[in-house]
Image (cartoon, rainbow, N blue to C red; front, side):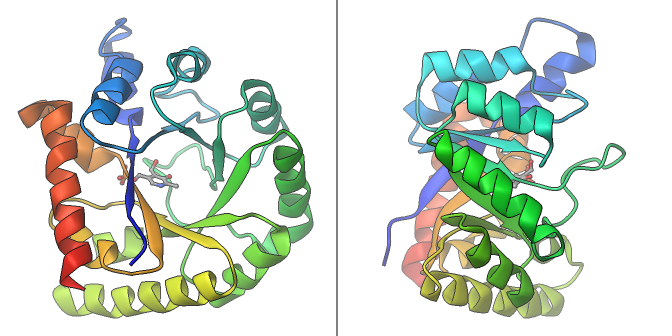
Length: 245
Ligand code: PXP
Protein backbone atom coordinates (compact mmCIF):
# COMPACT_ATOMS: atom_id res chain seq x y z
CA UNK A 1 0.00 0.00 0.00
CA UNK A 2 1.31 3.45 -0.91
CA UNK A 3 1.93 5.81 2.03
CA UNK A 4 -0.80 8.37 2.71
CA UNK A 5 0.03 12.05 3.28
CA UNK A 6 -1.99 14.70 5.10
CA UNK A 7 -2.18 18.19 3.63
CA UNK A 8 -3.61 20.71 6.10
CA UNK A 9 -5.64 23.59 4.72
CA UNK A 10 -5.25 26.62 7.02
CA UNK A 11 -7.70 28.95 5.21
CA UNK A 12 -10.10 29.06 8.13
CA UNK A 13 -7.45 30.29 10.54
CA UNK A 14 -7.36 33.34 8.27
CA UNK A 15 -11.19 33.40 8.22
CA UNK A 16 -11.19 34.00 12.00
CA UNK A 17 -8.55 36.73 11.61
CA UNK A 18 -10.42 38.46 8.79
CA UNK A 19 -13.68 38.41 10.80
CA UNK A 20 -12.18 41.08 13.06
CA UNK A 21 -9.52 42.59 10.85
CA UNK A 22 -7.03 41.63 13.58
CA UNK A 23 -3.43 40.51 13.03
CA UNK A 24 -4.23 37.13 14.65
CA UNK A 25 -4.67 34.16 14.49
CA UNK A 26 -1.86 33.67 12.00
CA UNK A 27 -2.31 30.91 9.38
CA UNK A 28 1.47 30.63 9.05
CA UNK A 29 1.84 29.90 12.77
CA UNK A 30 -0.95 27.31 12.43
CA UNK A 31 0.84 25.77 9.42
CA UNK A 32 4.08 25.42 11.36
CA UNK A 33 2.23 23.77 14.27
CA UNK A 34 0.49 21.37 11.86
CA UNK A 35 3.77 20.34 10.26
CA UNK A 36 5.48 19.91 13.64
CA UNK A 37 2.63 17.57 14.60
CA UNK A 38 3.21 15.37 11.54
CA UNK A 39 1.27 16.88 8.62
CA UNK A 40 3.06 16.62 5.29
CA UNK A 41 2.05 19.76 3.37
CA UNK A 42 0.06 22.97 3.73
CA UNK A 43 -2.74 24.13 1.48
CA UNK A 44 -3.90 27.73 1.15
CA UNK A 45 -6.64 28.92 -1.17
CA UNK A 46 -5.96 32.45 -2.41
CA UNK A 47 -9.49 33.35 -3.46
CA UNK A 48 -10.14 36.12 -5.93
CA UNK A 49 -12.13 38.02 -3.28
CA UNK A 50 -9.35 37.49 -0.67
CA UNK A 51 -11.97 36.54 1.90
CA UNK A 52 -9.49 34.61 4.05
CA UNK A 53 -5.93 34.01 2.84
CA UNK A 54 -4.12 37.17 1.70
CA UNK A 55 -1.21 37.46 -0.73
CA UNK A 56 1.17 38.21 2.16
CA UNK A 57 0.12 34.97 3.89
CA UNK A 58 1.24 32.96 0.87
CA UNK A 59 4.52 34.90 0.70
CA UNK A 60 5.18 34.46 4.44
CA UNK A 61 4.30 30.77 4.29
CA UNK A 62 6.69 30.19 1.41
CA UNK A 63 9.42 32.17 3.22
CA UNK A 64 8.89 30.20 6.45
CA UNK A 65 9.00 27.02 4.34
CA UNK A 66 7.82 24.53 6.97
CA UNK A 67 6.77 22.05 4.26
CA UNK A 68 5.68 21.96 0.59
CA UNK A 69 2.94 24.50 -0.12
CA UNK A 70 -0.09 23.68 -2.25
CA UNK A 71 -1.66 26.88 -3.61
CA UNK A 72 -5.33 26.40 -4.46
CA UNK A 73 -6.56 28.89 -7.00
CA UNK A 74 -9.03 29.68 -9.75
CA UNK A 75 -8.02 29.44 -13.41
CA UNK A 76 -7.57 33.18 -13.96
CA UNK A 77 -4.70 35.16 -15.48
CA UNK A 78 -4.22 37.02 -12.18
CA UNK A 79 -3.82 33.78 -10.20
CA UNK A 80 -1.58 32.13 -12.78
CA UNK A 81 0.64 35.26 -12.67
CA UNK A 82 0.80 35.12 -8.86
CA UNK A 83 1.63 31.39 -8.89
CA UNK A 84 4.40 31.87 -11.45
CA UNK A 85 5.84 34.69 -9.30
CA UNK A 86 5.52 32.94 -5.91
CA UNK A 87 6.43 29.45 -7.20
CA UNK A 88 4.78 27.14 -4.63
CA UNK A 89 5.68 23.48 -5.05
CA UNK A 90 2.07 22.61 -6.02
CA UNK A 91 -0.94 24.36 -7.47
CA UNK A 92 -4.43 22.89 -7.29
CA UNK A 93 -6.80 24.41 -9.84
CA UNK A 94 -10.35 24.76 -8.53
CA UNK A 95 -13.57 26.36 -9.77
CA UNK A 96 -14.52 29.52 -7.92
CA UNK A 97 -17.80 31.38 -7.55
CA UNK A 98 -17.97 34.56 -5.55
CA UNK A 99 -21.20 33.75 -3.68
CA UNK A 100 -20.26 30.22 -2.62
CA UNK A 101 -19.35 29.41 0.99
CA UNK A 102 -16.62 27.03 -0.12
CA UNK A 103 -15.59 25.24 -3.33
CA UNK A 104 -18.84 23.63 -4.48
CA UNK A 105 -17.78 20.84 -6.79
CA UNK A 106 -15.03 19.97 -9.17
CA UNK A 107 -13.50 21.90 -12.01
CA UNK A 108 -15.02 21.26 -15.43
CA UNK A 109 -11.74 20.29 -17.09
CA UNK A 110 -13.52 18.56 -20.00
CA UNK A 111 -15.51 21.70 -20.79
CA UNK A 112 -12.45 23.98 -21.06
CA UNK A 113 -9.63 21.62 -21.95
CA UNK A 114 -7.62 23.96 -24.24
CA UNK A 115 -7.52 26.65 -21.51
CA UNK A 116 -6.65 24.15 -18.74
CA UNK A 117 -3.95 22.59 -20.89
CA UNK A 118 -2.39 26.01 -21.55
CA UNK A 119 -2.45 26.93 -17.83
CA UNK A 120 -0.98 23.55 -16.84
CA UNK A 121 1.83 24.13 -19.31
CA UNK A 122 2.54 27.65 -17.99
CA UNK A 123 2.65 26.38 -14.41
CA UNK A 124 4.81 23.39 -15.36
CA UNK A 125 7.21 25.77 -17.13
CA UNK A 126 7.50 27.65 -13.81
CA UNK A 127 8.45 24.37 -12.11
CA UNK A 128 5.09 23.88 -10.37
CA UNK A 129 3.32 20.50 -10.12
CA UNK A 130 -0.36 20.92 -10.95
CA UNK A 131 -3.33 19.09 -9.51
CA UNK A 132 -6.87 19.39 -10.89
CA UNK A 133 -9.76 19.27 -8.43
CA UNK A 134 -12.47 17.21 -10.14
CA UNK A 135 -15.63 15.28 -9.46
CA UNK A 136 -15.22 11.50 -9.77
CA UNK A 137 -16.50 11.43 -13.34
CA UNK A 138 -14.62 9.46 -16.00
CA UNK A 139 -15.16 12.20 -18.61
CA UNK A 140 -13.19 14.52 -16.32
CA UNK A 141 -10.48 11.89 -15.86
CA UNK A 142 -9.98 11.65 -19.62
CA UNK A 143 -9.64 15.44 -19.76
CA UNK A 144 -7.21 15.49 -16.80
CA UNK A 145 -4.98 13.01 -18.63
CA UNK A 146 -5.17 15.14 -21.81
CA UNK A 147 -4.31 18.30 -19.80
CA UNK A 148 -0.90 16.94 -18.85
CA UNK A 149 -1.45 17.62 -15.11
CA UNK A 150 0.49 15.04 -13.07
CA UNK A 151 -2.01 14.98 -10.18
CA UNK A 152 -5.72 15.21 -9.58
CA UNK A 153 -7.72 15.70 -6.41
CA UNK A 154 -11.06 13.92 -6.13
CA UNK A 155 -13.85 16.11 -4.80
CA UNK A 156 -15.20 14.17 -1.82
CA UNK A 157 -17.83 16.79 -0.92
CA UNK A 158 -20.77 14.75 -2.21
CA UNK A 159 -19.62 11.69 -0.22
CA UNK A 160 -19.17 13.86 2.88
CA UNK A 161 -22.45 15.78 2.59
CA UNK A 162 -24.97 13.05 1.78
CA UNK A 163 -27.61 12.56 4.44
CA UNK A 164 -27.56 8.81 4.90
CA UNK A 165 -25.23 5.85 5.01
CA UNK A 166 -26.56 4.18 1.82
CA UNK A 167 -25.98 7.31 -0.28
CA UNK A 168 -22.48 7.74 1.19
CA UNK A 169 -21.70 4.09 0.40
CA UNK A 170 -22.87 4.57 -3.22
CA UNK A 171 -20.73 7.69 -3.65
CA UNK A 172 -17.79 5.93 -2.04
CA UNK A 173 -17.94 3.16 -4.66
CA UNK A 174 -17.82 5.84 -7.38
CA UNK A 175 -14.81 7.53 -5.73
CA UNK A 176 -12.92 4.26 -5.28
CA UNK A 177 -13.52 3.22 -8.92
CA UNK A 178 -12.43 6.63 -10.14
CA UNK A 179 -9.24 6.52 -8.02
CA UNK A 180 -8.34 3.13 -9.47
CA UNK A 181 -8.90 4.36 -13.04
CA UNK A 182 -6.89 7.55 -12.44
CA UNK A 183 -3.99 5.59 -10.97
CA UNK A 184 -4.04 3.20 -13.93
CA UNK A 185 -3.96 6.23 -16.25
CA UNK A 186 -0.74 7.37 -14.53
CA UNK A 187 -2.14 10.32 -12.57
CA UNK A 188 -1.28 10.72 -8.86
CA UNK A 189 -4.52 10.67 -6.87
CA UNK A 190 -5.37 13.02 -4.00
CA UNK A 191 -8.75 13.57 -2.35
CA UNK A 192 -10.41 16.20 -0.22
CA UNK A 193 -13.36 18.31 0.80
CA UNK A 194 -15.66 17.79 3.74
CA UNK A 195 -13.48 15.09 5.31
CA UNK A 196 -13.54 14.77 9.09
CA UNK A 197 -12.66 12.28 11.83
CA UNK A 198 -15.88 10.34 11.21
CA UNK A 199 -15.83 9.96 7.44
CA UNK A 200 -12.11 9.95 6.62
CA UNK A 201 -11.50 6.22 7.24
CA UNK A 202 -12.98 4.72 4.06
CA UNK A 203 -11.34 7.36 1.84
CA UNK A 204 -8.00 6.80 3.58
CA UNK A 205 -8.42 3.11 2.79
CA UNK A 206 -8.55 3.63 -1.00
CA UNK A 207 -5.12 2.26 -1.96
CA UNK A 208 -4.56 4.60 -4.94
CA UNK A 209 -5.16 7.76 -2.88
CA UNK A 210 -1.83 9.11 -1.61
CA UNK A 211 -2.84 12.50 -0.19
CA UNK A 212 -5.82 13.91 1.68
CA UNK A 213 -6.33 17.67 1.94
CA UNK A 214 -8.37 18.62 4.98
CA UNK A 215 -9.25 22.07 6.30
CA UNK A 216 -12.52 23.00 7.96
CA UNK A 217 -12.89 20.03 10.30
CA UNK A 218 -9.23 20.20 11.36
CA UNK A 219 -9.27 23.92 12.09
CA UNK A 220 -12.58 23.51 13.95
CA UNK A 221 -11.16 20.68 16.03
CA UNK A 222 -8.00 22.73 16.68
CA UNK A 223 -10.19 25.23 18.59
CA UNK A 224 -10.91 22.44 21.08
CA UNK A 225 -7.65 20.49 21.28
CA UNK A 226 -5.05 22.72 19.59
CA UNK A 227 -3.64 22.33 16.09
CA UNK A 228 -1.12 19.66 17.12
CA UNK A 229 -3.84 17.57 18.79
CA UNK A 230 -6.17 17.94 15.81
CA UNK A 231 -3.46 16.88 13.34
CA UNK A 232 -2.42 13.89 15.45
CA UNK A 233 -6.03 12.71 15.81
CA UNK A 234 -6.53 12.96 12.07
CA UNK A 235 -3.32 11.06 11.31
CA UNK A 236 -4.46 8.27 13.65
CA UNK A 237 -7.89 8.12 11.93
CA UNK A 238 -6.22 8.07 8.49
CA UNK A 239 -3.85 5.29 9.46
CA UNK A 240 -6.70 3.26 10.97
CA UNK A 241 -8.65 3.63 7.70
CA UNK A 242 -5.60 2.64 5.68
CA UNK A 243 -4.95 -0.48 7.78
CA UNK A 244 -8.62 -1.52 7.76
CA UNK A 245 -8.53 -2.00 4.00
N1 PXP B 1 -9.40 20.43 -1.39
C1 PXP B 1 -9.88 21.45 -2.13
C2 PXP B 1 -9.51 21.49 -3.58
C3 PXP B 1 -10.65 22.48 -1.56
O1 PXP B 1 -11.12 23.49 -2.33
C4 PXP B 1 -10.88 22.45 -0.18
C5 PXP B 1 -11.63 23.58 0.48
O2 PXP B 1 -10.88 24.75 0.38
C6 PXP B 1 -10.37 21.38 0.55
C7 PXP B 1 -9.66 20.36 -0.08
C8 PXP B 1 -10.58 21.26 2.02
O3 PXP B 1 -11.95 21.10 2.28
P1 PXP B 1 -12.48 21.16 3.77
O4 PXP B 1 -12.19 22.55 4.27
O5 PXP B 1 -13.93 20.86 3.64
O6 PXP B 1 -11.73 20.12 4.53
